[in-house]
Image (cartoon, rainbow over all chains, first blue to last red; front, side, top):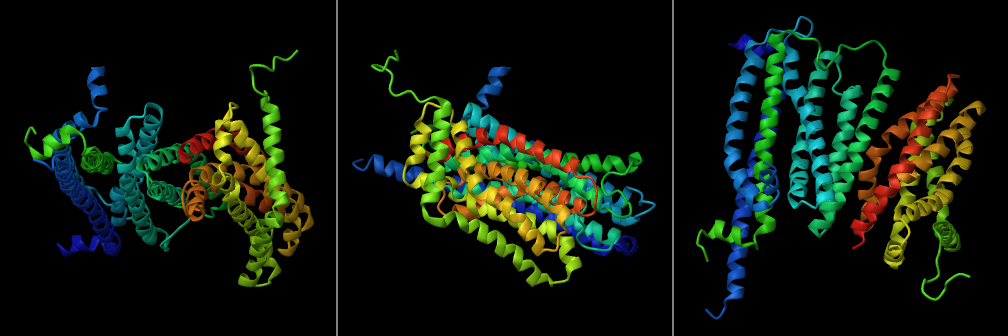
Length: 58
Length: 247
Length: 234
C-alpha cells in the first residue's frame, strides 16, 4: 500500500495536486450551497418585511 | 420545442428546471469523478518517461480545458445578455466567473506542481501556462469590474462588454504567447499537454474532463438559483415558493 | 438655398470629428502642462531600471527594449484615466452621447486626440531613452516605429477600459486590471521587434503584425468603447 502512496517517488507532487483540486472543488460546492441557503433566507426575510410594510393596518 | 427553450429564459421556469436537473447532474459528476480518479491513480499505467508524476495530468488538463470552456460560456452568455437583454444570461455569466477563475488557478497550481519534477523549477514560462496566467487576469478583471458598480444591472452590462472584448483577444493572446515561447525556447521540452496516449491513459482523461463539466453544471445551477432568488424576491412566484402559502 | 428654417445647424460627421478633435487638443493644451506628466513618468520609470539593476552596459542593452516598452505601456495607461473622466464630470460626455453622429466615430476623435497628446510625444522621446539604456543607434528607428504603431493600439484598447471604468469611483486601478491582459500581444511583438533589430535580425514580421493589431483595434475598439460609454453613462 505504501508503495502506492509513494507514487514512484513523486508523492510530494501528485498528492498535493489532488489535495488542492479536492479542496478547491469542495470549496466551490460549499460556497454555492451557502449562497443558495443565504439567498433563500434573505428573500424570505425581505418578503416578510414587504408584507409588513404593505399591510400594517391588518 | 422552441417554446420550451424560450420559456427557459424566464427566471421562474428556469428556477423550477434547475431544481429538477441539478441533483441529476450532481449524480453524474460524482460517479464520473469517482471512476475517473480511481482510474487515474490506480489503473492507468505509469508513463515510460515521467513515471507516476504524469498522473497530475488527469487533474491539470481537465481544469485547463474547463478554464477556457467557462470563459467561452461567459462570453456567449454575455453576448446573449447584451443583444436580447435576457437577464438570465447575465446571471449565467456572473455566476460562472468565480468558477472559471478557480479552474484557472487550479490549472496554474497543478501545472507548476507538474513542472517541478519535469523541469526542476516551480514556474516555467511555458506557452500554455503563460496563456493560463493571462486568462486568470481576464477573470479577475471581469469580477473586479462587476463588483465596482453599485447598480448591479450596469455592472452586469459593463462586465458583459469586457467578457466579449476578452474573448476576441484570447486567440490573439494565445498565439502571440505561443510565438513568444517558441522564440525564446531553448532545448525542446517534453510536451506537457496531451502526448499521444494509449487508450488506457486517454479514457480516464476524457472521463475526468466530463466530470469537471458536470461539476461546473451543478455548481452553476446552484449559484443561478441563488442569484434568481436574490434578484426576483419581489415577484409573486418567489413569495409563493418560499412562504408556501398562496397569499 | 439651404433650408435653415426647419433643420437645426447641420454639422456633418467630418466637421463634428474635427471639432471634437480640436476641442480636445485645445482643452488639454490650455489646461496647463498636465499633458507632460505621462512623459515625465515615462522617463522616470525607464531611468529607475538602471538604478535597480545596475549600470552594466551589457545587461541594460539586453533588457532595454523590454524596459522602454513596458514603461511606454504604463505611461499610456496612466494617461488613459483622464480620457473620458473630465468630460464625464462636467457633463460634456452626455452631450457627445446625444449627438446624432455615430458615437464610435466621435470616440475615435477623442482617442486620436489622446494619442496625439501622449502617444506621439512618447514615440519622439523614446530614442533618448534608448540611449539611456545603451541601445545602439540602428535600433532607434525600429523603436520609434514599433512604439508609433504600438501606442496607438494601446490607446485604442485602453479606451475600452477607460469607458468601462468612467462611472466607477476609483477607476484608475481597475482600468489597469482590465486593460493590461489585453496589452500582452502588443508588448510581446513590440519589444521583440526592437530586441531582434538589436541583433540585426529582420523585423518586418513583427512590424506587420503590430500594424495588423492596430487596424484590428482601429476597427473594433471604437465600437466597444461606444457601447461601454452608453452603459456606464446612465
